[in-house]
Length: 173
Picture 1 (tube, one colour):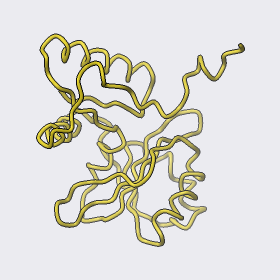
Picture 2 (cartoon, rainbow, N blue to C red):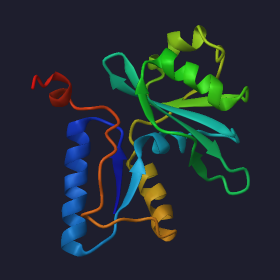
Picture 3 (tube, rainbow, N blue to C red):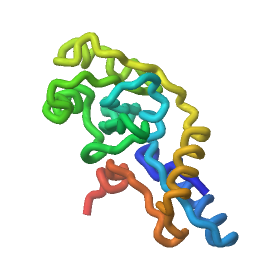
């Protein structure tokens, strides 16, 4: 089975992971956990070496991750941690990581970057709108992981929440 392990909404991740954990346990099948940001980056067209994947995290923030495409195989490799922050903060962090190389931005929500790009060194950078429907890409990436033996069992599978839940943020203990 292939499943998005995060980042994303708490409810969506919990429901998806619980369903896959149940199926994997009952049928004794392995699970390939895929990042939602990697599924976004994998949709970018062309031969771009650097792809910054961005998803709307709500509350004025984005989920962001930087991926580098291997020129020989076309495979994506995550460069650094996936983050949750404001768009200007993410662009500022990217400036130091991409080291002057051109990056393409891939996102199912192009509006979350619009204003931030204009006020940054990435002004005029290409923002490629991609599908918010990640299932076909997650299936393909999961299949590739499974073929490489990069799977886990139902008990080991865990979510990549990145941001703490509202309950944790608002808890007064």
